[in-house]
Length: 183
Image (cartoon, rainbow, N blue to C red; front, side):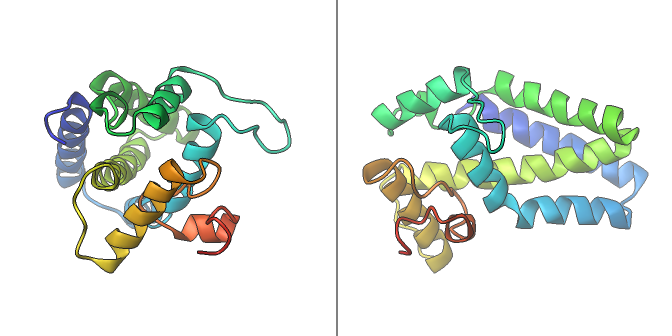
């Protein structure tokens, strides 16, 4: 995983966020933001997977988000073991980091809260990438939780691309009804 630029950039950015937090302190809101993003990661992944990577129409407005990520992901479905579409690249990770930090600054009027959202995002991204790499390898995880998540993602690729949108969590698939008939 670390032979790709995306995880390297994500780890470096995460270290910088943790250094910032170490110098400026952790407050209760920072802990709430980071832990909420981590515990809701399955729903974040599910949403991005369905509406950005698979370009399903957005609820209410029925717009489709078609862009380079959707094209990359479509190619990933054609060849799920090719490393080009398996892990996000460094430029994409940098762009999203800038958007999240800038969004925190503009919307919340707080660079510090932007760093908290970025820290949560980077943790979610690293868990996502790890599960995705596991799902596209010959590794069978020992943990039942990892094994279940990997199995659902493999089903997404091999049985029904409209189901099993979760990568690191099956909870969102169960709640959103995309777990392939209740498996």
